[in-house]
Length: 119
Image 1: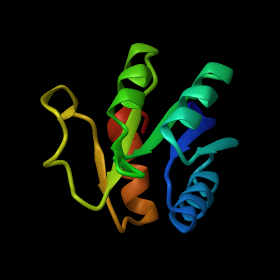
Image 2 (image 1 turned 90 degrees about the vertical axis):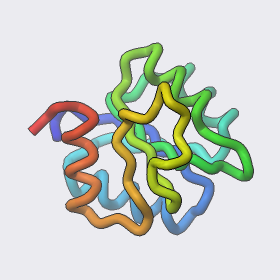
Image 3 (image 1 turned 120 degrees about the vertical axis):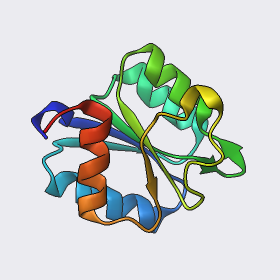
């Protein structure tokens, strides 16, 4: 996963965020940044554009689709992570790979490959 050295995580549940960070480091990420709010995610994007992102869909009652749109605009591949599957995504984001919680390291690897085309 050399193509995803820097990763943005948008996740409001600390235990999930830290477990995901550990998984990403295990599969080769070098720099993982965590945002727990939509505003924080936008600030991190303004600071540095990551190679890849994992977005929880529901962040404190709001959807992360605005962050997804900004990532897409900047050409950053990303996946969604949610306990609800991909049924709730708007039509424009239906093709984004979705990790259904709880997910495993293999699930994460597969989602990264699906989003980036990196094998």
